[in-house]
Image 1 (cartoon, rainbow, N blue to C red):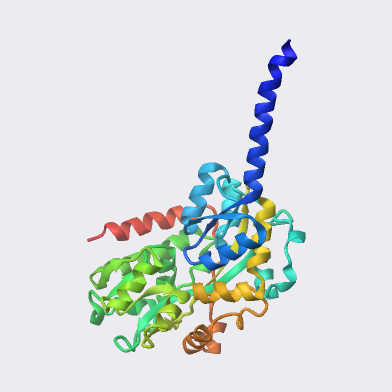
Image 2 (spheres, rainbow, N blue to C red; image 1 turned 30 degrees about the vertical axis):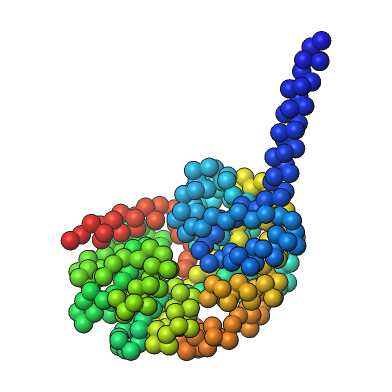
Length: 356
């Protein structure tokens, strides 16, 4: 009799487990940036694989926060930047190592793949592979602000009320470089790094009258430039390239002190429930024709070995108009963020925001 009473409960548990397993295999929960999952790519993937894609758009800070809150749960594949993985994993244990045998690494640009592997290898295990790469610098209406070439030029009194900024760590680092400092070299010395970003913050507070508004998303920034409300801002190059297709006066300007280089990755959350689906997505979007679709949509170049050719003709033109060979050689690549550094930056950014 005892066995008979237990059977319904065991059967119910088995059915729940089977249902959860089926859901996990048939659904990919993707945590990514705003332009990294275009509908035409999702539709094609779902049709070819039978796997449904659920997308949550986010940014680096939010990705880490969401995964930290769940211990690495809630998502099957995330796309943090290459410098946001090492410290987050050491502090919060939110990611799991990748099985590179499940990925066709032969399609990758070897330098980008090598850079990401170097930045995200812990105890011999690799945690990420690259997807998109780009830079942060300045987007400028060159007709209205032809001499704006540096982060410090955002504070030029000629542009009072006509510039924008994003109150994130990039503006602190960019201003630090504009002031003749080397913020990345100071990562290993919190006192020195604190001195640099404090000085950058004072400069940014002094020029708050120049700021029309602080932008939070690429669409916000694009609309400000389209309307003519602002003439320049710090920005991602892809945002600038997309605007350049609409208005040839607007394009990316690599700062004289060097654009800031980043690589956005594919990284597995520690509690992923659809690892096989995650690998299928990675391999799918790195196919040449799909990579071109994604690059044309986002405005960024993929990490495919032929990434420079797998994009629209307009993007190639915008890129070549913006970057000289010297500008490319002068890129300052984001270094791994030491634990605790972002807490320091957050307080400094709050001080800028609160200043009158």
